[in-house]
Length: 217
Image (tube, rainbow, N blue to C red; front, side, top):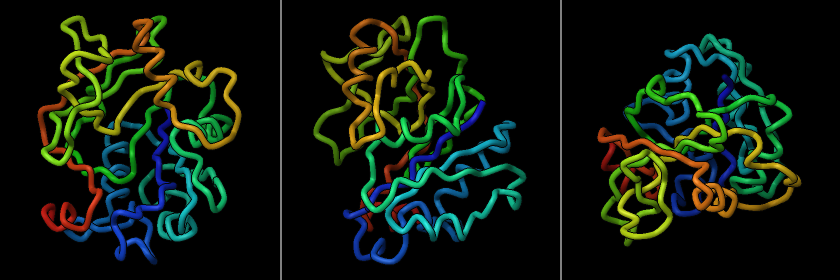
């Protein structure tokens, strides 16, 4: 399996820290956020990684190189000066990811999730999302998780998407390389019971503001 690390965002909420440094290279306890992901992925044998780039993406490529320093192979999906959002970024990266299920990780999260706990996608399932408790800074969660493991878009919406997921390429069927969010396609999959999830009770942080980064240190 290959992994896609989403690292193309502007990081506007992290200004001025992201004025000259992309958010995935911000350090927690002396190590860039994105390096934690690479180490976790290589630790379970995922050695082929694609990283999408836009804002200050050259700095990420310069820092990580071809991945050999981490015992893996890294390829880069360049989106240009304007990030393509989740759907567009995934679509542009598909030629590098191949035709099988792939793992997606947001480059700006800090999490102790064990990637080896992700299940294989069942037949007909387009996505599997890792969910966490909704943090205090969010007014509501994203989805709920039914007892049968299927995601529910409605009701309490008591859980938040952790930024870790498995996707089958067919969730992007017919998509063009343009700026769009994958969320409408994901919600359609949830509505037709083609999306499952699992709950992670451990450490997780969306490193979205300088204050949250400081709390992590």
